[in-house]
Length: 346
Image (cartoon, rainbow, N blue to C red):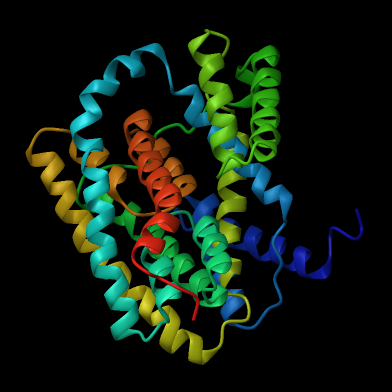
């Protein structure tokens, strides 16, 4: 236990807690997500030696997996055919991002071909870094580019939701733990653990979220789970996710800020334009309501978009179906497309 709580981890937890307290006192939105994220980001940029909580942070994502799985009900399954048209736009969305993003990182930013390719792909942060490393990409560049993408989108999305769409972000994230039957709590805990570790054993990508989601969805369809995880658990997940985003900037240099992070910021602007275009297309064609369309095509991380969908009171099933489609297509297709495009190690 003493070895786990190193000075760097204690400093990280303290910074995250101070950020949460500051955002709560200022009555800013999502204090348990943005407080830790901003505090750890500022501490990292100031040169503090921060350290993540390892498997504890990974395990926190199982809570969101259970939350998504609990929303998969027979009623949602009946709605899936209605989502087919908007889901069919996801491959086009990914293709357009790649066609613009790869030349941008290659020609404008000067990245090598492999790094440019995996920097442009709108997949999960960890997945793109792992695939890129295996292909010979610059891992540090990929980490900073994708962390910047997630950071900016997670920061701006709530502002747009409140200003453009009039969303209050005050939807209850879950019932208090005291209001959930003990039996259901134990079932959810078992689903989280079995899904996570079982998913890792069979090599499931994103096992910490997808594994619990699949197990919980089965239990939900069987009528054994009727509620989301308690709000205390979801707040803890927000805290750890926010902290994890901030510490990706530990050790960043001025040169990296000028070149890599600036490149990531510029690419996010491109992504914002594309996401806005597809959101408008889906909305105008009546395929989805504006809030659901916005959240479904926002190219952020799956975990972060899950949190925003919950607090915005959006149709969680609709939003997550689109993000899962995007993540699955990118993760399964990225190595294949890279090979077809002749992307080779530098």
